[in-house]
Length: 113
Image (tube, rainbow, N blue to C red):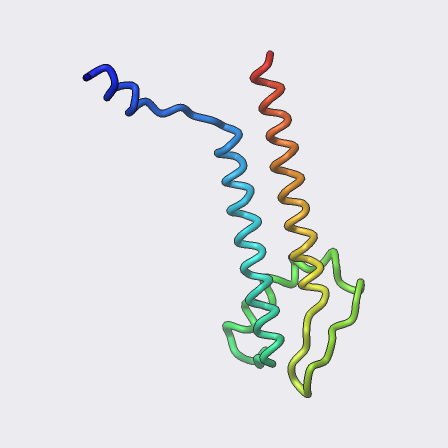
């Protein structure tokens, strides 16, 4: 019976899954920040607020590569739908998926050697 307990307590380390979790966590943080930006712009949050200004400044670097692709859609006098941020969310999700797949391929070929 003690042998079964020892086997059950052994943990196997899989670097592929660890790296995939780290990449997914980073992409999740980026996606969350962009979602907060979209909600703030949708509700017309004032950029003079320190929190809103901080969110806009952090996410400005993230949407930088996508700026100019599409104009924002005005929903009212102060609220807009930030199409660029939505495009950035899609782009980062695809990029994260590709990075995880590439790392899984690299680690699987290394284990075959």
